[in-house]
Length: 466
Image (cartoon, rainbow, N blue to C red; front, side):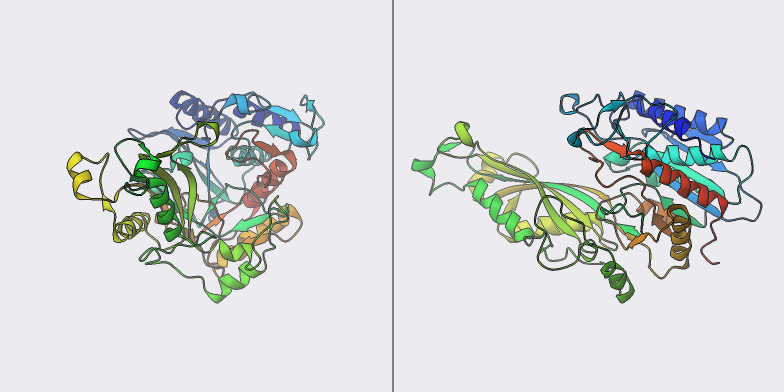
C-alpha cells in the first residue's frame, strides 16, 4: 500500500530545494537528494556528470530475470521565478485546499490527505512529481522484487533545451537499454482524463531585428524617407505565418513526416479542450492541429507606447520567435529557411549592428539569430507497445485514457530515440498547473494517480514485441 502522507512529505522535501536551471548549487542538491532517497528505497542510483553539464541521476530497479525493461525519463530542473509574482514563496512548498484563485486556504500536511488539495511550488508539476511517484511506487514494494525492471534517467537542464542530453545518452547507452522509454512530463488532458501521448513537437527559437536609422528620427521630417523598422518587422512577421501560426516559409516543411490515416483517426477521437477563457477556432480539431508545426510570435519590441510614446521613426524593432516543429523537420534547417525567406523579401542580413558602410549600401537591414533545440518525435499509433502502455494506464486509472498522437509542447525526446526503443509520454500533472508561470501547482490526486501508474508498470509491462 502507498503511504499517501509519506509520499506527500517526500514531495514537499524535494520541492523545498531550489531547482532553477541556472542555479548549479540547487541542481546539485536536487540530484543528491534524489540519489539518496532512491538508494535508500533499494534502487541502484548514481549521480553521473559530464564536463560542462548539470548532473543526471541514473539508476535501475531490478525486476525478475527475463522480465520486461521499462525506461523512465523525467527532469528535476525548473523555470526561473520572480518571488514577487507568487502568492506563496516558490521554494517554500505550500499546501492549499484548492486553487488560490478559488479561495484555497493553507493547510498543514498530516495523516489525512485530500485528492483536491494543491501543492504550490516551482517544479511541483513540471517536473519533480513523476520522480516522487516512481519513488513512492518503489517504496510500496517493501523490498519485494518487481516483475518489471525500471531504468531511470533524471536530468537537470530540460528547461534550457537539454543541450547535453545526447551526450549523456551516448555515455550511458549500455545502462539505458529498455524495451520502451516513457517520458514522464507534461499535463493530463484538459478534461482531467488520463492521457498517453505518442509524440512531441521539436523546438527552435530565433530573434529577428530590423534596423532603421542609427537613432530615432522625427516622424514628420523623416517618416516618408527613412525605413520604419516597426512597420518592416510587422510585414516580415505576417509573411512568416498564417493567423493560426502555420508556416508560410518555403522549405520550412522539408522532411516533415506527415500524419497517416491511423494517426489522424486517433486525433479525431481526442476531445477538444473546454473553454479556456477565449473563443477557439471555428474549424479543425485541437489534436489534429498539434500534428502541424507552428511559427509563434512570443514578443515584439520597438519604440514606446502610452504616455512614453514619441513622434519618431524608431531606430530598430525586434521580434522573438519560437518554432514548434514536428517529426522530420530539422531545427537548423527551419531557422535557415526563415533567414532565407527574410533575405528573399529584400533584406540584407547582418551579424550584428550594421556598419556605416552597410547602412550606406543597403536600405533594408535585418539580423536573424537562432538557436536550434531538438527535432520532434512521434511513435506510430499502430506500434504494439502503444496498446501495452495504454493497458497499464487503464489499470491504474480505472478508465480508458486519451491517446494523443502528439503533444503541443516540446520535450527533448529526440535524443532518446538513439536508444532504439519506442517512446511514449505518460503525463501525470493536472492541466491547470500554471506550468512555467507563477503559482505553479500540483493537484494531489494527480500525484497519487502517478504513483498508481508507476506501480502498474512495476507489476507488469509487456515488451514492445509481445
